Amino acid sequence: MKYVGMHSQISSNNRKSVLLLIMFPVILLALTWVFLAIINYLGNEHYDAYGETTRRLDIETVNYYFLQALPWIVGIVGIWFFIAYKFNASMVRQATGARPLERRENMRVYNIVENLCIAGGMNMPKVYVVDDPQLNAFASGIDEKSYAVTLTTGIIDTLNDEELAGVVGHELTHIRNRDTRLLITSIIFVGIVSTVMSLIVRTMYYTFLAGGNSRSRSNSDNKNNGLGIIVVLGIALLCAAIAYFFVLLTRFAISRKREYMADAGGAELCGNPLALASALRKIAALPGLTEVKRDDIAQLFIVHPQGLTSGIGSFFSSAFSTHPDTAKRIAILEQF
Image (cartoon, rainbow, N blue to C red):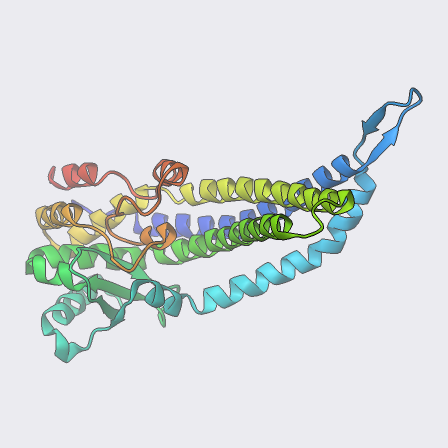
């Protein structure tokens, strides 16, 4: 399989990275305005000329509070993003349990990575290993200082040299195409929204718990206050869920084509498309990492393991997955 369009893919990923950086704050700020508007509408009751209770939206008041909240939202999210972006390498290592692989520990792996980097005219990234019998591999990092290829002990022990070279070539292509920078950006954004949703759910839970244990629950004022808090939190949760949905849409903008491109690049670097196809078939039989329970981290893997999410989360995960079907990837590789 001939690897083509590398510069076009790099340019595309750069544009998508900028798009994600723009879209996320736009989505977050838009949902913040919607939240304030709903609260304003529900709380802005008045009586009309006929004595009937009506509600109306006071745009000026909504805009006033939105402008008051704007610098806080931008500042907090900006600091959060900067810290996560700066320390993404340690974040991924902690989530996966990866550790540095010393050259003397496994000369075979180091020789494969080094030879492929020479063939591709690339600087050699860091090499990490995860002590896990399952089969998987991934590339990570945002620049030359943080680029890394991580392999499980399971994939190292199971694949032969040609198959392992195909897998490493696939991951090196992700680095060369700057896919990893795009994916790390996506992971951070999804993580921010997920954390906000989790905080809202916990606050609702403790509010219910406090309301149920309150000795003064017979007091109508306390009941009304508690109900008001629940309504506000419910609206906030709805807005956060909508934001999460749109963040998934932006993640879906990270085209599944990048995996096909990485397969093509890996096949070119190792010189054996059938070896990479064979590796994917073996990995698909036992993919995953025991320590990883987060779907956003799993999108880095060469084969996305199923079952990290359940229920409606599983539906959204599959619907907006950044990975194409493994069988289709194998079929394409076996055509050449």
